[in-house]
Amino acid sequence: MSDTEPQTAAGKVLWHFTMSLDGFVAGPDHEMDWMTGISARPGLVGEYVATTGAVLGGRDGWDAAPGSRPYGGSWKGPVFILTHHPEDAEPAEGVTFLDCDPADAVRIGLEAAAGRNLEVFSPTIGRQLLALNLIDEIDLHIAPVLLGDGIRLYDNPGGAPIRLHRLGGGDPTSVVNVRYRPVAKAPAAG
Image 1 (cartoon, rainbow, N blue to C red):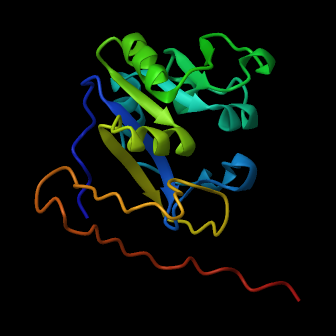
Image 2 (spheres, rainbow, N blue to C red):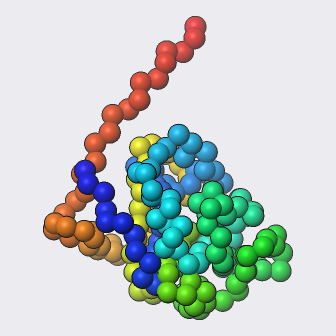
Image 3 (cartoon, one colour):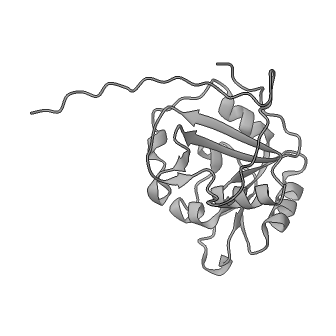
């Protein structure tokens, strides 16, 4: 399966996640240990470091890993955390806590991104921005793991389906085909 075109810094609002094959972007309580041992194509992290101007995240994710920086700390730009209670958030250098509506958070983030992309690292905020037509692209990296539980990328019970067009060559409405094989587990000691 071919990969997508390299990401560009075009002032986009980019909903960006590594996701399990069954649709989770984090385990229960925002656990991320499931990503250990998963590899990406060479240069992928550098691509996002170069094209990201600012990050917009949510309070739940921030509280699960306060002070952590995207891309293992190799990215140094401004981080905005959208929260209803900024007064009790654990502060960190380069992080601004916002108590505003999501559209205002996008405006603030895009201004800070200075022509590069605003990456959205929150399923809840991403869903809200989709409803407001403020997401330019959804950029997913599907990891070869099934979590079975955790934080879903998109959850909108009772909502209408949102149709998407795949970027790159070919039919934008075609499915993406992936094929994996379960990794054999060692027999239990007995």
